[in-house]
Image (cartoon, rainbow, N blue to C red):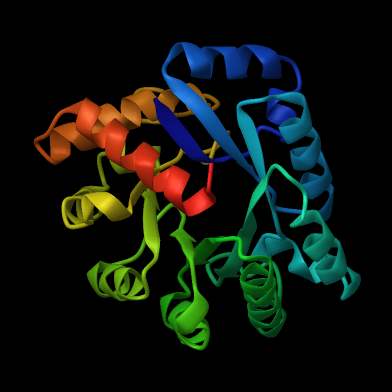
Length: 253
C-alpha cells in the first residue's frame, strides 16, 4: 500500500469527480490519503472529507499565504479541531517568502503558535517552507526538544536537508522531482535515509512530467514511487513499504 501524505481533495478542482478520484487512487494502490488544510474554510472541508471517506484523514492549519486573513480566534479553533478522531496533523503551516502574500512578521508569529498547538496536541507538523530556509530553521530550533513533523514538498538545498534531518523531521517529495530541471532535487532524494522519506502529490498541483498542465491526483503517488525507486536503484516495493511505514509512524495511522 502507498500513502499520499499531502493532498488537497477539498479544493474545488475535485468537486465534479471526487468519488472517482478517490476510487482511482485505491485502484492504484494508494490506500490512505492525508487531506491537508490551508485555510479556515479548508479545515472545515477537510474534517468533512475525513468523516465521509474511510481512507481519508485530515490535518488542520492555515497556510502562510492565508494567515493575514485570520485573527487570534483561529488558534482556539485549530486546537479544538486537533482533538477530533481523524485529525492526524497540524498543517500546512510555515513560511513562504517566495510569494509573500502575508507579511513576514505575521507568518513567523503564526508559525510559532501553530508549533505550540502541535506540541500541546501531540500531533506532527506539516511544514511549508519556500525561500525561507534560515527563518524556518531558526523557529524550528526553538522547539527542537519536542518537535515532530515533515517538511513537505521539499525544495531546499543540501544544508537545509541536513539540518531538517538533524531535527528529526521527515522529508517529503512530490511529483515535481520528475521535471527536467529538477536535477538538484533528484540528487538529494538519494541522500534521504529511507526511514525518513515520505511521498505526496500536493494535488491538484505539481502533476508529474508527461501530465503537466493537467490536474494532479493521489493515484500519481504510484508513478512517484516508481520514479524514486529507479533513482535509488531499488524496487518500488521497497519504497512503498518504507514510506508507508514512515507515514503510519508519523501520523499514527
